[in-house]
Image 1 (cartoon, helix red, strand yellow):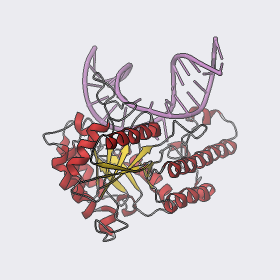
Image 2 (cartoon, helix red, strand yellow):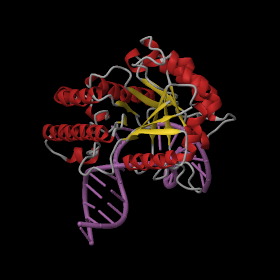
Image 3 (cartoon, protein in one colour):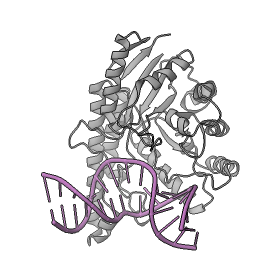
Length: 339
DNA sequence: ACCTGTCAAGTCTGG
DNA sequence: CCAGACTTGACAGGT
């Protein structure tokens, strides 16, 4: 089983490469010349896209094939007060450049819209805002020229005191969206509300792939071991999403592997928080448990030290290999689990 | 150069 | 019913 690792949003190794520079609404409102203020926002977005490309080049240099882009590329773009603003044409070329690079170098990119994208909400306005937010992310992927193997990962949302009803509402409100958005979604179990099993059943119902977060499952487990759910989770990657729509079977060269999230608890007092680095042992135990089920898997490292945590993990895995673990380090971003 | 409070957005809890 | 927690990187405004 080939395992590819990736990291989130920013690099702690690169200087001057923030992909999420911003401007607050407070500052924007203070600027007397609105046209000039909008030009400033476009300028910030250009910098963010330039740095996103820089980060992708950093990925290529390291051998990393998995990267989550930040949601903050265009500041304030989904803000109520900027509804009339259309910055996309001015940024189209830079989006295209980012997308081309990702495609040429086989880097699987994705987004993770923030926690106020809540499709289970009972509030009409929150639902509408969530769609606006998703539309923004999907639009960026479209401008990058990336097919819908490039996805947006979200959570089910709040429970509002009745998880069953809220889950049903998620399904109804999810189904009411445009296909171009629905086809980009993956669903992840969260650390407080919808467990892995609950998220899995909803993923099956609406026909989207499920991203299993091992750490969230550890702190919000339900009754099942993660690997017990794995067969069904893997099936969501076969029967829905990019693979299913294009008739791609596991083992085909263009097969999109399932994705999981990995992080380690920050401390005993804050078990839900993300630690600086990830514990290789816990990760390996999970990978061994599922090694026979799939030819490949992609693992997103969610650690405070970002790309440095990925580098450290690779070093730890090299050491494990030297000590006889049944793995083979391939390059700076991937290993093979021997079975 | 460095430090601190604040930021557009959501949900949940406790007072 | 409202204030604060949660969580995060970066701004904004101060020293």
